[in-house]
Length: 236
Image 1 (spheres, helix red, strand yellow):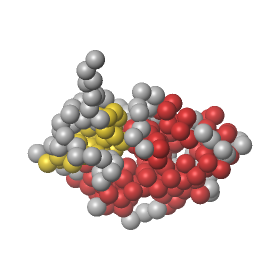
Image 2 (cartoon, rainbow, N blue to C red):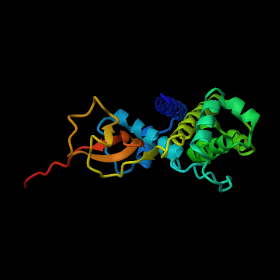
Image 3 (tube, rainbow, N blue to C red):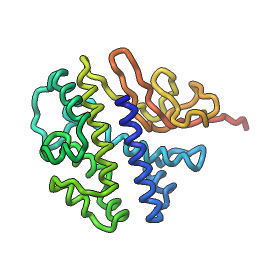
Image 4 (cartoon, one colour):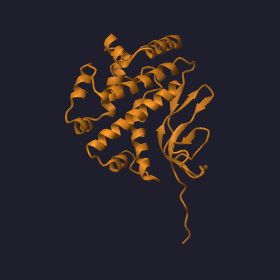
């Protein structure tokens, strides 16, 4: 359930991001190709997976480290699984605004700030909103009262909660990505376009990872990948 909430929150934010781009007349197909330049999309609507991949990759970067490699965090000993679970239970009952107002210098606030500055490039923010007001507010530790940032912050909270829960296990649950060009494996992958593809076989390869997979002990939660069809060899 925690994982599903995190994945839904990312996709909800991506939909809002795409709506903002459409409102500013962005060429979305061109933008998708800038993210995944070597991918041939089987259907025109599949370029949306490139935006999902972009956000998922940046939001989950550092997931397997206990403090997400936050630049402003002092290196400390990894907290116990009991403390991680206590943090998970406490933050689960709080809204993002409550967390910020209670302690704007807490690790989650730093995580939210760091990820926003990575996901939303200055040129992107200026193009979408005509200024860098949200970026400036976030950099100063404030919580912008905009729909866009509220959706981003909720996404960040859901990913942070999943991270807290992951480190409540012993050993911690880990996220993994599938390398480009890897042959399709049902053990570690599922098609993000499930239901639209032809029968998926081992001849398909991963064009790019959209949603990371997870390993919890011996249990594997499949990564969702965009697949490249097998190359058809034509005789001369």
